[in-house]
Length: 200
Image 1 (cartoon, rainbow, N blue to C red):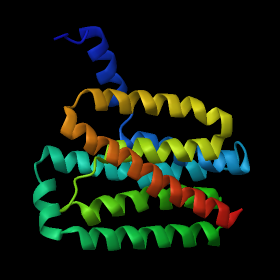
Image 2 (cartoon, rainbow, N blue to C red; image 1 turned 90 degrees about the vertical axis):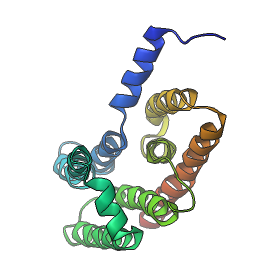
Image 3 (cartoon, rainbow, N blue to C red; image 1 turned 45 degrees about the horizontal axis):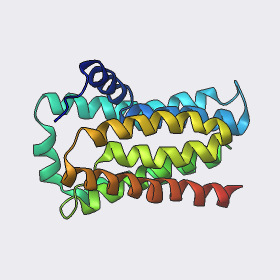
C-alpha cells in the first residue's frame, strides 16, 4: 500500500481551500457582466453582485458554523422556507437587473447558483449532495459557455480541485461526489445555458 506524498497532500489541500463555492461563484459573477458589456462599465455590477450573492452568505454561514448555531437553525427551519427565500431573492434580483437595464447574463449566473442550491436543499433528506462538487461541475459549464476557449483555464483549475476531493475519499463516498459533480453540471450549467439562450 502506497502513502501519498506529503507535498502532494499539502498542495491538494491548498487547491481545495482556495476554491470554495463562494469564491468560485464570486469569480463567475464578477466576470459575467464584464464579458457581456465590457470593462470597466460593468465592474460595479460584478463586484456588488458577488458580494451580495456569494461572499456575504458565506461569511454569515461561516460565523454561524463557528458558533455551532447553523445546524440547529437549519433543522428548525427545514428546507422549504430557505428555498422560498432563495426564489424570492432570485426574482427581486432579476427585476432589479431588468429595471436598471443591467447585464442579463449576470442574472443567468445567479439563477444557475440558486437552482443548484435549491436542489441540494430539496433532496437533502433523501440524498446528501456535496455542494463544492456540484459547484465544480456547474461552474465548469458556466465558465466554458461564458469565456469560450479561455474557459478551459477555469475548467483545469476546477478539475484539479474536484480530483483532489475525489482522491481523498473511499469508494462509496466517491460515487456520491461523482453524482454531485454531474448533478451540478446538469442543473447549474443547464440552467445557465437555457437562460443565456433565452436572453440572447
